[in-house]
Amino acid sequence: MPELPAAYRTAPFDEHCAPRRLLRLFNGKWTTMVLHTLHLLGGSSRPGHLLRSIPDLSKKMMTQTLRELEQAGLIARTVQQIMPPVVEYSLTEMGQKFIEPIEMLYLWGIEHADLLDRVTAAQHAAKAAMKNQPESITEDW
Image 1: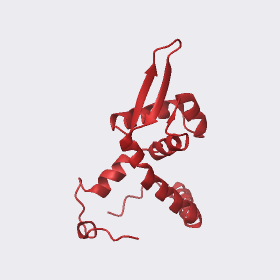
Image 2 (image 1 turned 90 degrees about the horizontal axis):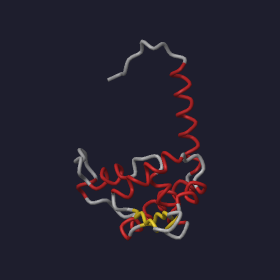
Image 3 (image 1 turned 90 degrees about the vertical axis):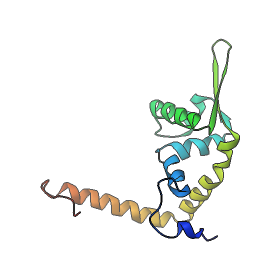
């Protein structure tokens, strides 16, 4: 794996540094999934097809995510003025550039599914333990 530049190997990390900006961009629960699905669908899709392609994604959250991605310039919304109007979302040139890191992350997740399973189990155990503790417990810091 290539080594990070020296500025990114020591803390503190500036609010505007590339890693933090990238993580902020991918912060939404559905952001990477919508971009990746559009990519897998050939780069564009009508909203209904996109919604059916992502299980558990609500229409409201899809609409919100699409708006955010459009505002960021990662996707484009096209409306054909016919009756009824046809809406299609497509990856922009900039949006296509973000597919590579998303696929790298997804590939890592596939290759390390056992680690993800362990983290998920630990999170569920911690959540269950918190339910069994009195509410008067405060943060350690």
